[in-house]
Structure formats: structure tokens, C-alpha cells
Image (cartoon, rainbow, N blue to C red; front, side):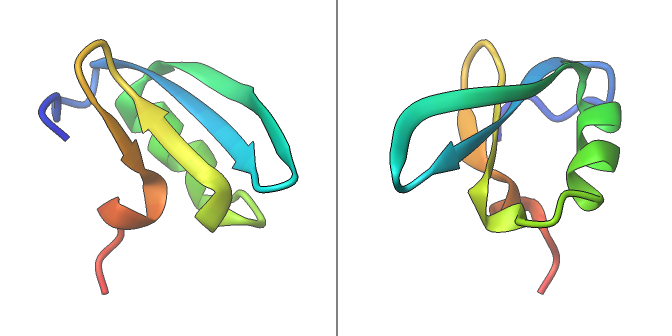
Length: 63
């Protein structure tokens, strides 16, 4: 993810394999989006988008 500062505006959304429409869960600072994503029951369905990049939430997690 190219934009990495905590106050960067991001869109946190959910993609479902059975539904081609993305559901926006949050739009705001990256730091808050990550906090919200951490409590989501299905993290594999979450994506983050900035004005210049898109990344799966699980790609940001430490193994």
C-alpha cells in the first residue's frame, strides 16, 4: 500500500464472492479503518482503498 500514514483517507469495504457489489463499511482515516477491520468477523472479505492503491486487509496483517 503506497499511502501508509495513519490519517490517510481510505475506504474500508467488504467483497463477497456471491455478490459482485462492494459494501462500504467505513470511509475515513486509515488508523480508524484498521481498528474497525480488526473487529470484523470475516477479515478475508475486507479491502482498503486509497486514492492510489487497493489492498486486501489480510495482506496488512503480520503472520
